[in-house]
Structure formats: structure tokens, C-alpha cells
Amino acid sequence: MQTPYRAARRTLFVLLVASAVAATGCAPFGLSGSLDGEDLEFVEAVYFELRATDPATSTPFHDIHLWLTPMEDSCTRLPAMLDELASLRAQLEQSGLPPVDYCNAWEDIMEAYVGLEPFWHAQVRMKALPRGEDVTPQTTYSYHDETALELADAPNFDADILYYPTPDFDACAEEFSGDTSYASTAYPALAGTAEVTAYNEDESIETSLEMNLGSVDSELFSGLSTASFCIAAREWPLSFGLGI
Image (cartoon, rainbow, N blue to C red; front, side):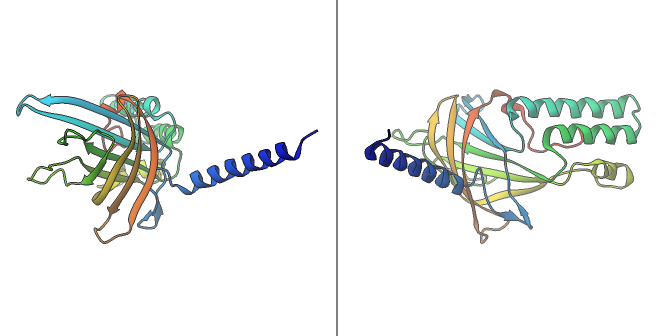
């Protein structure tokens, strides 16, 4: 028989769990918001970090690249997709694969990995150096345009958010019927902060992002993510499509 104390404790536990789930659900994953009428949506986050010294300048660096991806198990599946696209492209250019067969196969590959709906893909590039002696990678990174001539004097970040249109047969066929080809639209970060809220070297990071996209006067796009370390992400291209 359940005592009043146990019943009350059980009720409290259920309420706490429900509250935690609700709070988690309210926090958008990666980044939230809408760009040009399209809602941002990501499936997974992974990251790669590299600590070394630039041989040309003898300057130490510590780069942390966070990827927000459109697929599960992206550390394994994104490289596999890129390999399949590259192999298919080689068949087109070297073996004379007919365009119709190429686009049918291309659509099959894209559907298997990302589906046949538009999708988002993003890279956030954080530079943990230079930083003060009392500062760790678990800190706040202010926006700094990485193409600027002046160098940042504290941890900083830059980012690109990419929108890919529907990857179907018709999108592929554009390359063979005109001067265009399947490609993403890039939205670079223009202001904001990227905060590493938890850090386990070469294992995992938790991040809180807040940035302007499209214009410096736009709303802030924000979100949270937990990313696992992925060594394959060191070689990922920012843009991909018809095997390129």
C-alpha cells in the first residue's frame, strides 16, 4: 500500500521530470529562427579541435570547429555521403554516365542521407587563442570577422549557416539544362557570441550560440547544443552538392 509520503514524493518526482522536459523542449537545438521565410532546423552537432603552432609565425593556436548537421550519426554518415557523391561525379565525368542516370542516382544518395526536403548545415569556427592565463576554452567567444586585417585579442568566432534547396532530380537536372547547378545559400554571421558552457578536451563540448545573420540589425538567432568530438570533421568542406 502506498503511503501518503510516498505518493507525495512520487507526485513531486513526476512534476520535476515534466518540468525538466518542458525546459529542455523550450531550448532550441543549434540555432532557431527563420531566414528568408525558411525555419532553421538541425539534427546533430559534432566538433573538431586542433591545438598546434603555426610554423610560419611560431604563433600557437587552438581552433574549435562546431558543425550543426542535417543528419544523425553525421561523423560517419556525412563522409560516406561525400564519398558516394564524389564517386558518382567521377562516373559522370570519366565514364560517360548519362545525365538521367546520374541525376537518378544523385537523388537516391541525397534522399538516403538527408531526405528530399530543404535542409540546413552550419559551421561555427571558434578560436580559443589568444586568451589570458586564467581563461580556458570554456569561455565566451565574441564575433570577429576572420577575413579582417586586424587580429582579435581574445577568444573569438566566425560562422556560416548554409541553406540547401530540395535535393531532388529536378535540382540535379538544372546543371544540364542551364548555367546553374545545385548549391547552397550562405548566411555568414555578422555579430554575436558563441559560448562554450562545458568542455572536455577532444571528447565533447556544450555551446550556447547567439548571432546576427543576414544583417547586423536582424534578430538574434540563438540555440544550445552538445557536440561530440569527430576527427573526420577536420576534412569536411563547408559546401557540398554534386560531388564537389
